[in-house]
Every structure is written in C-alpha cells, then in structure tokens.
Length: 155
Image (cartoon, rainbow, N blue to C red; front, side, top):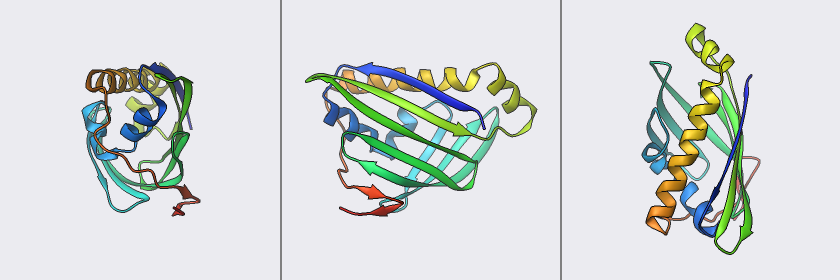
C-alpha cells in the first residue's frame, strides 16, 4: 500500500481546526473527488468518491479520536485505506495538521497515479483547501468532542 504523508500550517486555534475536521459530512467542500460522506453513527462513515475517473463507495470506521490531537480510521469494506490526522498546537492561533494515509490503488490508472505522486498532490491540495476554508470562516461549522478508542465511543 502506498503511504501519503502531507502537512500544513493553519492560522487558527487547534480546537477550531480539530472541530472543523470532525465535521466529516463537510469533507466534499474541500476534498477533491469526494462526492459525499455520511456519518452513520459516532464511529462509522459511508464515503462516495471518484478516483481516477471511477466511482467508489466504502464504509470506514473511526478507530481512534482524541479531541485536539488525533483522528484515525480504516476502511471496513470497499476501497481499502487507513490513516490518521494529527493536530499540533504551534501557538494560540496556529496549528499544524498532519495527514498520514495508506491506500490500495486498483487498476493501471490508480497505480500509475500513485507511482508518479498524484495521490500526494491530491491530499496536498485538499489540505490547502481546508486551510482556506477554516481561515476564511474564522470558526468551525460544528464540533464533536467525543473520544473513540479501538472503534468504540468512550466519552
């Protein structure tokens, strides 16, 4: 599985950045190719996305979630992927967002794209659009501050 690692600094407090990231159904606003994300319950999401010209659907489980620190996930069916997003306070109004993601490319087009770094470029673009979204708004559109461990809500 190819690994994607990207990061960006966002001019906003860590809690604001984290709160916005947990608004999973808003991902199509900044993630290229993502048509929809539906939150099924506290730890499960249904994704619909176009990747290399093909429509894919999958269900993902949030395996770990710690407010202002980390969100980790893995696919439980469909398009295989897993990863984590971590949030690092730089100062009162600046946060570093780091994405690490593994995914399984299917077919020649996806494998070629992964080989030439198109997947890294896509995630980089998504982070830049996320930065623009949160900095232009100045506040999050919602928040879920619950905690998840091993795919189960604990708080």
